[in-house]
Length: 323
Image 1 (cartoon, one colour):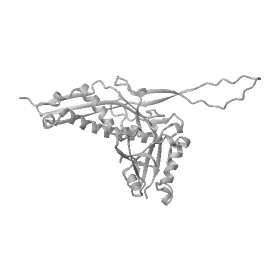
Image 2 (cartoon, helix red, strand yellow):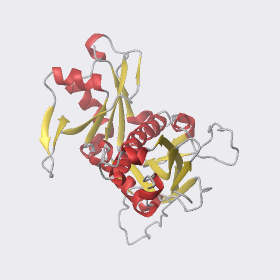
Image 3 (cartoon, one colour):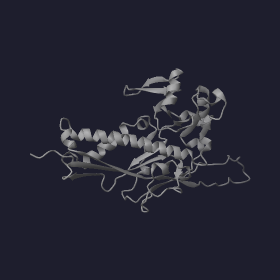
Image 4 (spheres, one colour):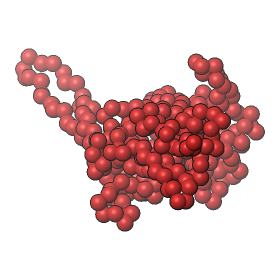
C-alpha cells in the first residue's frame, strides 16, 4: 500500500485559485478596501513582462471665458500622461518528510492551501508596505507627508489634532481617507489614551477605528529612532492584479531522501495609484534577464515618481513620536 503524497492531493487548477482567494481574504489591507482589483494592471502571461503601462488623461485646466459677439472661444486641448506599475514575480518551495501522510487525519488539500495562503498573505503585506515606503520616498511626494517628529515635547507626539492635520494635507479630498495603518506601539498608545473605537462591518465582524477610519495594525510599518510612520489610505489606493506564471504549481518527490516538495509561483501587481514605477535604481539579483524587483528595490525612492496631483493620490504618510 503506497502512502498519499502531495502530488496525489494537489490539483494545480484547484490549488492556485484557492490560494489566491484565501491569501487576499486573510489580509487586512484587502479587507479594509485599501487594495482593490484593477484589470488595467494585470501582468501579461509572458514571464518577461516586467511593467504595465497605464496611460491616463490629465485634468482640464484654465478658467472659463466670457462670451462675446466679437470673438470666438479659444480652443484648448487635453493632454495625457502615463502611470506605470511593476510586476512582482515571486515563488516559494516547501518540503517535508511524508507531509501529506502526517496530514491524513484531515483534508490535506484544505490544510496545505490554508498554510500556503497564510504565508502568501504575510508576504503580500510585507511587499505592499515596501511599495508604500518606496512611493513616499520619491522626491516629489513631500506634499503627501506630514512630519512632526522634529517638534519639541508633545508637539512631536501623535494626537487627535495633529492626526487631523495629516489628513487635511489632502485639503478638501481628506474625506476620501477611510483607513489608517499603524505600528502596534502606536495603536497601544492611542488605545491607552481611550481614542480607539470599535465598529461592526456588514458581515457582523468587529474592527477597530480611529477618528472614523478603520485601523490596520502591522509591525512592518517604519520606525526609526523613536519616529513612527503611520499611513492613511483611501479606498482603492493600491491597485492589485494577479497574473499567470507559466507553471504556478509544481510538486516533486525525492524518493531517496523521503520527502515531498510543493512549489508555488505568483506574478502580481501591487501599485500605488498615481506613483509611477521608474525602476531607475533597481539592484541586480544576479540574473540580468530579470528586472523583477526585490522588496529592497520596492523601498527605494528613486525607483518611483509621482504622476498624479497630490490630492488625487489616496495615501498620506504621518511621521510622529509616541512620547
